[in-house]
Every structure is written in structure tokens, then in C-alpha cells.
Length: 402
Image (cartoon, rainbow, N blue to C red):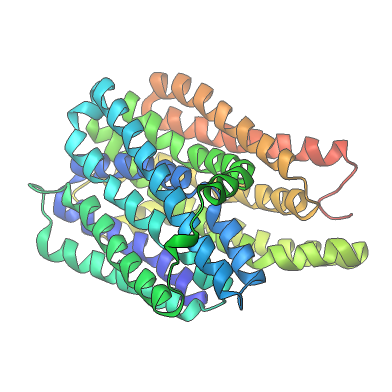
């Protein structure tokens, strides 16, 4: 599992300077915008079924008949959602001028959605075969980087997302081949009712994940409407840096969550001690990292062979340095909410963040461009913090006590 997370974390670090060097800042901005849109659509087509599937397969790991039936249901459900998602994208691309101008990039990028949606990580996580999942993921990302290095330049930059999607489709096909060798599908037992029940069961979870995904991608989508290609390219780099921080905290979140849930049920004093010790240490690391970003971020960026003016990022790195601190606060609050099964409160805080991002992102982004958009993002993150704290306070739950 550690290697899987390392792969997911390192690939964005490697790919951004490669793309900026090979396709240029303006083309990179269109690629980043299309990827943000695809991230939302991937979450929509997943519909929370990966989490549901992981839980059900882990419970029924030895029941081949159940897994075969569930695999058929999830394949059909995702095929329906992928079709709906593409129709929505096609209509929006037709009516939104900016998207219509880049229709080739956007529509071809949908291969990412197809590949990631059909990837059966729910099966490998459910049977706890993380080694196979790690190998497939590593192969996909390695092949993606090789294809970019060999075949992509500024004249065919749309292939960046095409190759991303194709590599995911390849590993998804391999994964399904491995599954079907062990557990063949029985089409005669297929019932549409099973698909509808699966969609019904996952609808609330899908709303939560879609809200969070839309929030994380909303700033980039808003930037596409407000900024010219050069400024959009600059914000795209900032967005990639922010997503690195988000992904790092997601890794921490997934590692802590089972332990926090256990402590909530067992011992409030031990939970308080664990929270104080862990977050004090993590807070010191985050504070040190934030100061490094503020004071040395521009110098580090200048070490990469990028065709951009690094000096203009000095002000932005001051703002970027604040972001991990807010993420740390929201991590602790999110852990408290979910470990106490307050899923609706967690969804509400995400909705507050999304609405705040739309309001302040559109307003400040229109007035102050890149800086205004990023300040809007910080305000949205702060609004999630306030909403989460209020939810805990109403239920008399403290971050550091039960």
C-alpha cells in the first residue's frame, strides 16, 4: 500500500515539469483544466461504488457467486453512468464557448474517465491483494510517462490526456482478465434489479464524494472561465502544488482513520492523548514545510527547466504556505466527524466549502485574477474549518476529547 501511495504522489511531481517543458504553459493550462473536469466526472461515474464494493467483497471474499454477481452489477452500473457522463460533457462542450474551443482536448480526455471508472480496485482492496493493485498502478503511470516523453510535443498536446486514458484502459483490461480467470461472470443470473439496488445503496456516499471532488476541482474550472491562457497556466501550476498537499493529507487520513474509529469506541482519554501527540508532531512538520514554501518555494521552482518567469510566483508562494496549515486543521476536524459517524455533518461542511468557493472564487477571481482566485480558495478552506467546528460544538464533541 505504501508503494501505491508513493507512486500516486511522485507521478504528479515528475509529470508537471516534463509537460511544461514539452508543451508550454498555455497548452498545459488546457490540459490541467480538462483534467479537473475529468476528476469530477470520474467521481460521478464511480458513484461511491468503489467504497461499497470494497466493503462487500471483504465481507464475502470466499463467496465466488456473490462476487460474480456483484461484478456484473458494477460493470453495468458504471457503463450506464459513463454513458450519461459523456452525454453531459458533450452537451456542455457544445454550449460553453471556452469548452467548445477546446472540444478535441475535452472530449478525448474522457478516455481517462472510462479507464479509471472500469478499474476494479474495489476487488483487489476487498480481497486485500494490494500487491497486484500496486503493480498495475505503477505500470500504468510508468507507461504514461514513457509515452509522453516519446510522442508528445506542443503540436499534439491533446495526446497527454489521451495517453493517460489509454494507459488506464490497458491496466483495467488486465485487471479484469485476472478477475475473470478466477471468477467467471454468469450472465444468465444477471438481474437489472441488482444494478438499481447498487445505485440506490451508494447514492448518499456518491453525493458526499462528488461534493468533495467538485470542491477540489472547482477553482480550476472557475479559473478556466476567468483567466487568459497564460494566467490559467500559472494557476494550473499552483493548483498542482495544492493537490500534492491534498494527496499527502489523504494518505495520512486513510492511515489514521481506522485507529481513530477504534479509539472513539474504546477510550476517550487515550484518544485525547493520541490526538495531542500526533497532531503536535505533525503540526510542527507542517509549519516547517509551510515556512520552507514561503521562503524557498520560488528558488526550488527555478531549479526545474521551465519556460516561465519564476519571480512572479514569489507572492503566490506566500499564500500557498498557508494552505497546508488549513488542511491540517480540517484533517483533524474531518477525522472527528467521520469517526463519530457524523457523515451528514461532514457532507454539509463540504457543501459550505463548495458554495463559498463558487461565490468568492468568481468574485475575487474576476477582480484580482490568479491572486484573487487563490484567496477565494483559502476562504473556502477556512469556511470548511468553521462549519466543521460548529458541527462538533453542537454535538458537544471536541477535537481532542470524546
